[in-house]
Length: 306
Ligand code: RIB
Image 1: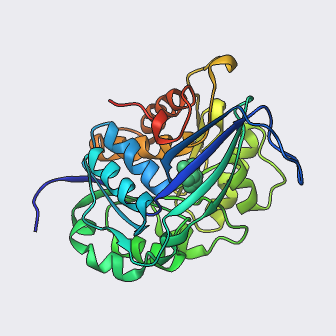
Image 2 (image 1 turned 30 degrees about the horizontal axis):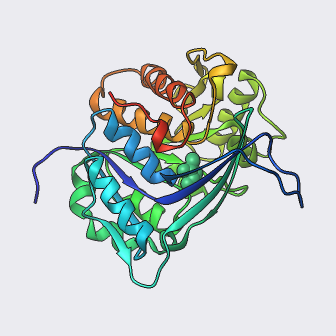
């Protein structure tokens, strides 16, 4: 058993991103000329892990890759980021997950994922990594890997757990909301999960937090892009708070892909390293990191170092 500290443990996805930069997002049935292509390392789980590692957290990732060249490269890349990859397994006969991402000149994106090997992350991967689960201060999970294993991981973990419920489900299982310390979603995901038509204002976000707490969540953070984030705790129903983000001029925003992952990795890093700070201080620090990431293209490629 290792006695080395483990700040952030991520149980989740690792995906290769194929990003096309294009004047605007295509309509159904339309072919567009894009102006640039970039391949990168992505997947919400690995992104969040890399974001925390670059800020100085000791991190470990539990994830599945294919036994293809993407998987080989990805494992080496995670090691280069100083992430513990003891439980990043390459599976024979499986393909590494891929994401097809379009990013418009306005910085909007849409993403299709084909998760491949990520679909085989299972309950036994939690049991096999019991030592990591006992040692980590913060656990992060997302919804790009099987839900059953995620629920099991959350049940086994006794520290601070963050669920990034993305891609969001219209019917989120109550257990998922109840079993994490912090639920973190963006405004679009929060709208889908609560049945609201959209979340356009801080007051809408406060209503969504109220609804998510009614549905079972303990503490909720809703990120609002350039407007920062709103948070609320079940035990303090009258004290939801809005944290603003540093202002980035529109002409400097080049790619918002992965900004939410930069936020969550930074949030986990701050929770692990400064446990006595207030949630709003953690959110403020995470907003700063996310606002830096939107100023560079790519997902992990855009995440800052400490
Ligand atoms: O959040 C951005 C990520 O979503 C991308 O890296 C892509 O792989 C998808 O998982």
